[in-house]
Image (tube, rainbow, N blue to C red; front, side):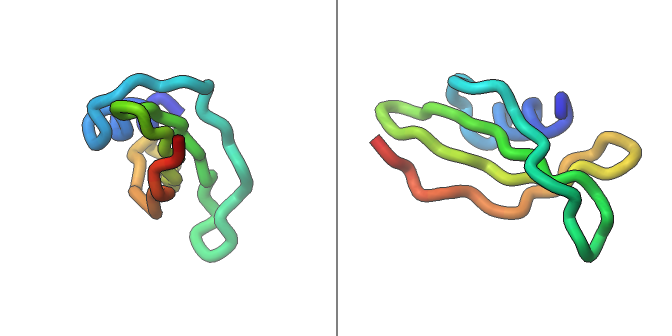
Amino acid sequence: MSAAMSASQTIMGGNSFKKPRVLKRHHPSKRKEVATYFKSGDLYYTLYWIVSDNCTAGFIKRTQGKR
């Protein structure tokens, strides 16, 4: 999960407002899907990552910013 957090901080440049969570095991790749939660400005975002066995994070998607 630390790989997803550091990658999220690089992309968003904001502060995490909630601890990252492992949501599920991604079915096609059998890897863990992790959600990270960030605040940038006055908007809140959720970023989804696939974390591999060697702790590298691959970006899946980001939600639209919400207030």
